[in-house]
Image (cartoon, rainbow, N blue to C red; front, side, top):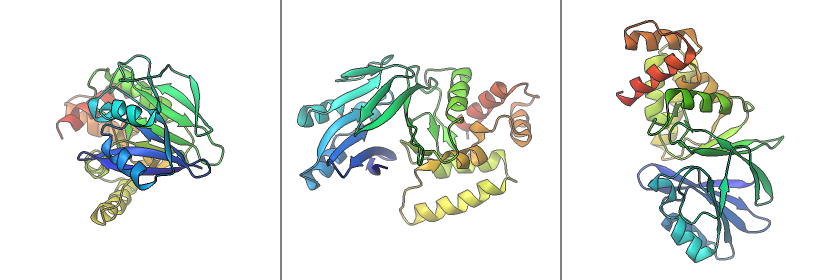
Length: 259
């Protein structure tokens, strides 16, 4: 497996840097700021930034792209349905690319933005997912452009991935997301255990990511709309009995927005 390292940016962003020791090439994921990547390259002078992967058009994900491409010549991949600066290859759902000799599949996951994509590497031993702002640790992205139905379908699609899939999302939101998870399912022991573990990590100034798909299924309310306790909590917040998993998801997202 490639080494995947987090380069912190802004307040809570992570720029993921995929690294191939054999070739000393690396790939930056959603570089909203060029400086952390350039600083890393300066301290690793034998390395080359070969590619840049973009999940969606928001500035904190694309702000550093043009500077990085100008200084390194990296090839830029991004969603076809969005305006991505300096993009070389526009990706649509299901399209496959090779970076660092690894095959990645672009997956359309509209909701946070309409053209948002994720990147999935289906390795038999260790699959991994670059989920952008769609699936977070214990949460999901806000619906800036898409509908609850779109985001629900996108999350359900990602949730079909193997249990051991490592999830590299782009914000350190885990603690605040888990507080919401506790409000939704106060009796869920998996959430209580995860809250303790993540609290210890953050108090030690360590990253809470990547997360893993089986952990998300057990503790992320946005993947648990079909669970009776989650349905009950969402219905109570809405003041009416909700019918169907999409309605439950929409109520959860609205609740989280004001949490």
